[in-house]
Length: 623
Image 1 (cartoon, helix red, strand yellow):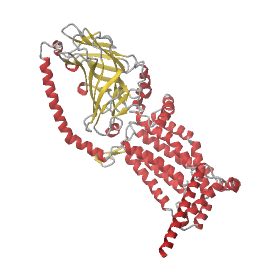
Image 2 (cartoon, helix red, strand yellow):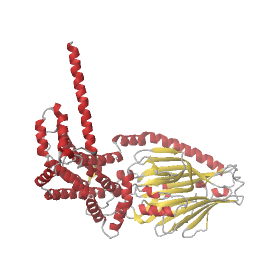
Image 3 (tube, one colour):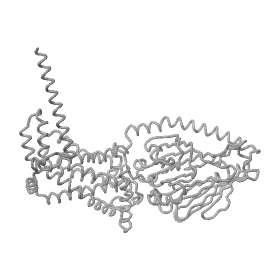
Image 4 (cartoon, one colour):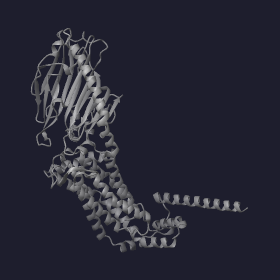
């Protein structure tokens, strides 16, 4: 393997390590978050508690006024109504007229019980209506439950004048989608003519759903989509808030594998979004809040149309849910499954997902699916692997000639001349020094696609393979009670195997390249050995399915390289190069080689000018 191939391998590693480090909270960020939680957070919570207390006292005083149009709605007894289909069970409370619990029937929590997205005090939802004489906040009101069926229910807020505000819920069949229309009847005199909107205050504490807190946290974020734009999100690693000036299609309280999404047909405006970190061990990941407004017609002629999605972050499920949403817009809910940067996302969307669905549809275990996907990917990139290997083999075959040039120009001042003759040698034998690097770089998007796919594929969740009980979380066959710096309280065996095969891979590749006394190559050699150690500390708490993929990919790379070495006779290759040696008239450089030669000539010109200036300065000094 030549120097450029090693550079290509190093670049691929740097991309993977860099992305891992980018997604891993830094020590400074963790310290900042901890400091914020322990000090500033306490002050903020005290201020908020005082503000809530004052607001509650003021609201209680207003509600106690028997002249209030909604005075009778301030008294009542909380009752519950359940809507469900084969996928989801939703519980509604008449206090606030909202969904107070969501249970997904086809998924289990870590105790192997039906997964509850939220329940009890985990979530709250308030609709605010500004009247002429008073304001109404739904969360304090008792609604009347009417028109209840297995899939529909109306929460009605009655006024003393005979008018009412209806919250009409409809659970769509065979889906995780819930329609909601908000409509006023006989309330024209309650609202001023200037009222054209209502406010929404939506809160939720996102539960910890997965085994590893730190890993789940990387994929848990308040996500939102501006109208006509791609999605955006608040920070996953620290407290964050943002006031969004653009209109929004939806806001999502997102966990790694599940989301609660609130959508508006006429968009949300003036949104203020807030995400706060929860302490590890609390059972929660984030504390979310979204305050916004949406159009509302006080006359009731045009109902406000909203929707909820309470379900898994499964790409094709979200894609199908788009068709159940508002007809005039593509909600792009599938963006909640992050599939990587643009080119990598395309590979995942049109290749990886379909390949995975086909293999998993055969009834195979997820471990075998990953194995087969790795084999298929290796076969697909085999032509570029072979091209890279042959380029490296040609460079090794020409090494005796390169060694002669090194002996001919041992002095540092002859480096430029040596480089020029080396490039001429490669051109003479039609060998490109970049031939081993570029094919490897072309493989990078394919390998990176699985790096993004595996942690975001809900199908791996709670799927066991060998000693790993959950391919979507770290395997902790080796664990202890205390937390150690960098590695925590466990060793992931798949991560250890992945790191070990990476070391073996580097040794095999390095043995193909005689490092000699080149200090740059020696430094690169150490970098290639240090990289697996970095991988271990980064991937120790990553999904075991991802480490397993890199492990078997590394094993296959070693086998493929060994087979290619057996298939290649470098003496015959050199004889072939000699037979195809170019005549001097055919040695005109082109493409990258021409650019490299032009650069060398420019360097040579600058060096001559510098030498002439130095000689002139010496001559002027003597006279």
